[in-house]
Image (tube, rainbow over all chains, first blue to last red; front, side, top):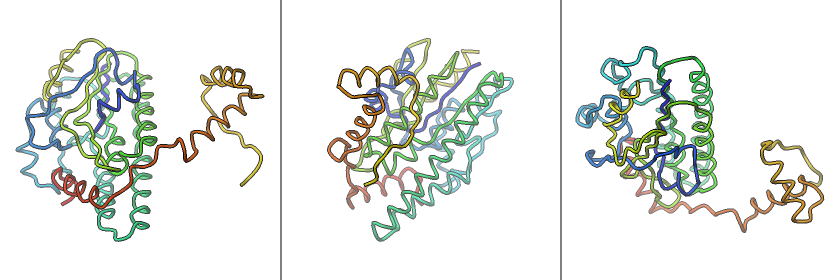
Length: 236
Length: 72
């Protein structure tokens, strides 16, 4: 079984700082996403799945509709596997309602006039994200014990929480430790990557201009996110 | 402030460190040592303060989230 941890916004510098040895595996580094005009989640994961730069196609959908993009699995590298499971991946199996509510709460946060209301919305936003994370963890844990030839778990918690809480080191450390623990429980061939990282704006977090990768078997140096299609298919 | 103790679960793998720490620091038990560690960690002195939310940072983030497609 090949396992992929697709961790949105996993930041290389925090993996180092928090000593996340399971996330690092044997080889780790940064991905090259410089070919993209902005580190957009839907663009990057679509490009990961197809092995080609999907920026033009995804952006043509517009900011609202791009989040509802659902690709045909036959247009992705998952078609090369007999019995793949892909959990919550943007552009394929994304829980659209869950993530729509996240964006709605984000909008509400910016529109709120007073601090008390902002704090209330932020708490609701955080609770919503952590509840979803627990659900995904359970789904992932079940899937890796079912004998599939490929399991991909997409974890959005670092990105969602990071946008409003990146300056809260304790919270971010707890998230990274949790993700590290998830990685530590996987046996066999594991590939970990993120679409982009995160950089601090005061209390908040913006997408950084590189992603994270790690493997147990070879040094990928500075791969592009579009390289992972071949990297993963070569493992079959 | 409430007195007394409650039970909290910790990972089994921590017990040897708690026992060692308690012994070396003069605490009567790993429970007492664990309480001390938690009190220190949660105190205002050691907990890293939030960076603080400024209007300027919020405005920057808002613009960035628009550029990334999160906000229409």
